[in-house]
Amino acid sequence: MNDLKLLPTLAAVLAGLCCFSLSGPVFAESATVDAADSDHKVMAYGRFVPEREDDFAWENDKVAFRVYGPLSPAKGPVSGVDAWLKRVDYSIIDKWYGEHLSGKSYHTDHGEGYDPYHTGTSRGVGGTAIWVDGEAWPAGQFQSFEVLQSGGEVVEFRLRYEWDTPLGRVAEDKTISLALGEQLYRVNSMFTLDGVPAPLPVAIGLTTHDEAAWVSHDREAGRISTWEVIDESGIGTGALLDPGQVQDIVHQESEEKDASHIWLVTSTSEQGALTFRAGFAWEKAKKITSFDDWNRYLDSRSGE
Image (cartoon, rainbow, N blue to C red):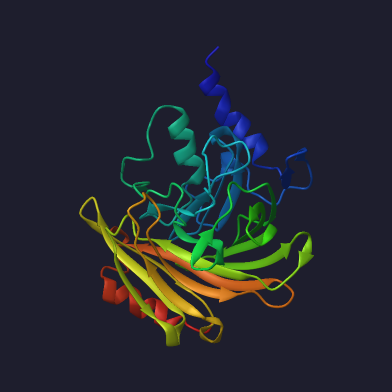
């Protein structure tokens, strides 16, 4: 029997998982849409993807993202956020993963979009890191997840990260939401240090892809942004923070692969809380088609 033909069916079953931890999956009332019903539906959607190395992927009618999970073979600080470029309004996550398992690569644009965006050990599109003496200390794969809502106007879920830093053992419970019509996902994180809520220095990063991207920032808007050309088409990334919480903006170049970024440097609250937004726009989606357009869009969302 062909195992590949079984995997999409397995995906449909496991898409109903509500939460997961390293001790094993926990079955509960589903907060997701059955994968078999997701094709060509316009919705804000996200799910755990065990059939593809424990990804967690989410999307709306504009953009799509993914991160690596506990059993991924990816090594190092791989908690950066990957961008999937789409130019259709309907859901593509289950379709692209299903086609991938059948040998049709989502790294090639077949008319709906594709994944040319390299994340690696970078922060990708808005990944976080503990910031100590001008150096970033990011996490590896997420350790557990919980889907809070999916399949309607908003997708919302929670990821947990734990990792060692020079300050001690840090944990981040990251609640991410993405509404229809938005280019930016919202993050509400709670950090602990050695198990106790604490104020921590944090940086939010955008990869510059080894300085292939142009960078821009506006401290008064709490904004950092990039624009680069991939396969002859522009891609803008950005992150927004409450301007009053910006402590520094750092453009950090490096000869090490995936280490060049522009950073928003801040601190959590005394209770370890941090809120920000991050996302991207793709020229071929025909909504935002230049770096100026992208920066205007981001600045118009400042303070929301």
